[in-house]
Image (tube, rainbow, N blue to C red; front, side, top):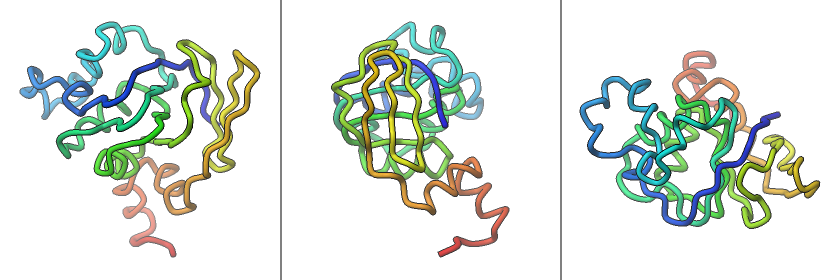
Length: 164
């Protein structure tokens, strides 16, 4: 069960907005780069969000380059999951691979700073602020297992191969 506050973003949040290019020199120091996550989309985000909070966005979250840094620094910043109407395909795969939950759902009924509770295995989002319950298709078992282990590398280190 994941619990935190919603931080709203719009459509087409690119990997350049997630990991600003002017901090390219920090790519070998990801915890430092995470201090600048989404700085160009919302300057106060990294310094104001709390561990466990959610990024809630519109369509096409993570478009742009295929670098893993974008998903990794979101996770390192303490975001518990990204909820969006849709994701760029490569960002979605990178997020699961690094252990960052990404949920495709209708985000219109989630407002800024709403308190959310998310159950990945049941596909339920409870908006504790509004009292609404939203649903999403539960993640496939293998994705849930990868997320539980913290990413695909940890999963493979533990199990040696994918359990199918």
